[in-house]
Structures are given as structure tokens and as C-alpha cells.
Image 1 (cartoon, one colour):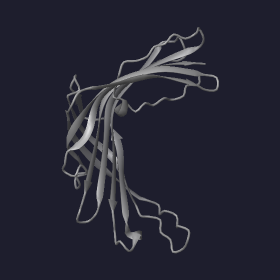
Image 2 (spheres, rainbow, N blue to C red; image 1 turned 120 degrees about the horizontal axis):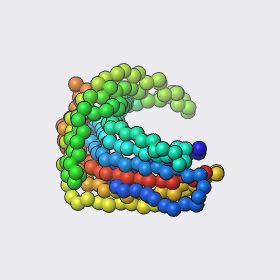
Image 3 (cartoon, rainbow, N blue to C red; image 1 turned 30 degrees about the vertical axis):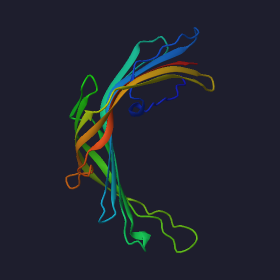
Image 4 (spheres, rainbow, N blue to C red; image 1 turned 90 degrees about the vertical axis):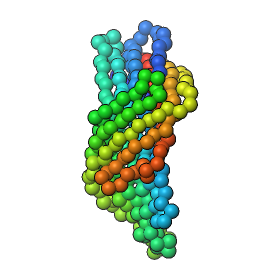
Amino acid sequence: MKSPKFWLRAAALGGVVALLGALPAVAANTRHFSGEGVEASFFSYNEVHGSSTSAFVFAGTFKDRFHDPPGGPPVTSSRTEVNVYLSQYFPGNPDDPSDDRWRDVFGYASPSLFRIDGRLQSATLEASIPATVCEYSPAVSDGPEPRPKPTPECTEVTLTVDLDWTGVGALTREGGSFHFRGDGFVVNGHFQGLRRSAEVAGVVSDGTTDYTGGAAGAGSIFQARQGEVIVD
């Protein structure tokens, strides 16, 4: 069965409650997605060295329920996971861009603790995440054409994530419907959402560096549901 993937950014939509639409009596499959989660971002700048660090954390508990084949028994799955992406820039000699450096750190895992207040007023996340660290240098050239970017050097680290979200402001509601027609299939869906902005405090550390920069970050706490009917 042809079933294109529709990934709504739950953190941006924030969301609740789902679909349902009446369709003709043809082969159809229904899918329901629901979840709750958090997202956070941090940025820090070192005025002495000119280096900068950006950190992004996304975590959630998500459930998926669908019928495949159409009319068959429901298939359900659930997961709780946390994803982390960190990016750092280290400038070198201003007259020699070849010694500038970039570092990316990324990883995901199941958290040891993930809890959200039912009214989306607070959340707590604790996790130990195996992550990959890759360092890059820029493409440099002595002529009109740049040389290929060198292959990054990558190593493995373990990140410790210990963050608390404190909601600020009112809940926002978002929702809508979508319709997609492809080659031999149609998808009708609906989504709605709840989200509250939040301040985020804590650490994202590899044991040496705290990638939050020791300052509070910005984020949100959300709930999300989406439903879709896929017709062949």
C-alpha cells in the first residue's frame, strides 16, 4: 500500500486531537498519531575567543496507531526518545581562514526520566546519550576553485542531559486540515495542538563542556495529535 509519510513538526505545532473524515467505500487506511514533548534551544558566545555554541534538545513520548491492511486489526507502537544536536564554531587567525574549526555533536536515546505536568506548566528530562562528535575544517583554496572540504574527524562521547522546563505565558492552540493527492492515492488529515512557551535551565554536558553556556534557554512544552486517512 502506498503511504507517504507526513511528518508535522510537533514542537512547532504543539498539538492535540485528531482527525476524522468520511471517505467513499474504497480501500482506505487510517492513521492516528499522538504525543507530548518538549523542545529547547541555547546559544552562547565567548567574547574573548569569538567562539559560539548552539544547542538544541527535543524529547517526547509518541504513539502511532494504524490499520494495515485496511479493515485489519490495529497496529500500535509507542516510543519515548530524546534527540540532541550541538554545533560549535572556533575562529582562528582572522588572516588565515584555514585554521577555523567547526564541531557538531549529535545523538539520541531513551531518557531515564521524562515527566510533563498535565497542564503543560513544567517538565523534567534526564538522559544519558551516546553521541558522535565530528570536527571540521573549512575548504580553502590557493586559486579560483575551493578545495574539497576535508573529511571530518569523528569520535564518540556520552552526553548528560538534565533539564527543567518552566512554562511562561498562556497556552496557544493551533490546528488545521490538509489534503494531498498523489499518483493513485489521496490523503486527508487533521491536526490540532496545544503549546506553552517555557524557560529551560540545566545542563547538557560531555563531562568537560556544558553546552548550555550556563544560561537559561528558550523552549516550549506541547501536546500533539494528528490523524489521516489514506485512500488507494
